[in-house]
Each structure stands twice: as structure tokens, then as C-alpha cells.
Length: 121
Image (cartoon, rainbow, N blue to C red; front, side, top):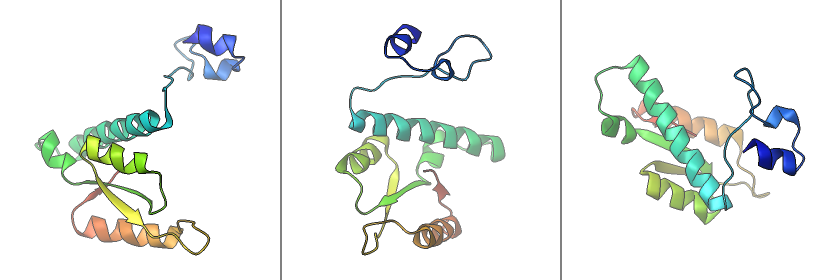
């Protein structure tokens, strides 16, 4: 992908030029696809981390405990990604300015942890 990054004028920080480079990655064709890929990557990472701390669980057991969070104003592609990725989605009510408030998110995360769920995104 370096050729494309150079063609569109991305700075070197975005390119994978050496083994020490932190650049590189993928391009998605739609925002919906990018949302799905992000959720799947996060799910994979969360399962790996859970295995490191709690060996002996099957991936499906861990996946059943994962929960992601978004505003109740999020695009429908977020719900679709969660359905495809088999990840529980918790919708946080937006305020009168249509913003998700940190306090409500924190409370939801704390409540879910008490119920044995594993926050993801």
C-alpha cells in the first residue's frame, strides 16, 4: 500500500518503510466496512487479552461476554457490525445535544463488569 500512500501524498509516518515503521494498514471501501473491520479487530484483541489473563476458556465463551458501547444516535452500520460480529452492543442515551456523556458510559461499563461482561469498544 506504500505506492498508494505516496501517490496521494501521505506523510512517511503513514507508510510502512522499514521494520521500525509504525505506518501501514488497510483501506476500506465504505465507512460501514471500516466499522465492521474495527469491531472484528477489537473483538480478536479482546479475546486474546482475556486468554492471557484467564487461560482455559474457549473463544466462543469469551465472545459471549464481550460488550461494546455506542451512542443511541450511532449510525445503523454500528448495529449491523455488532450483529455480524456476534458482539453485544450497549446503547448509551444521548443528551439533549445528542452527545454521549462520559458519566453514563462509565456507569454502563461498571454495571456490565459487575455482571461478568467484558467491555470491548
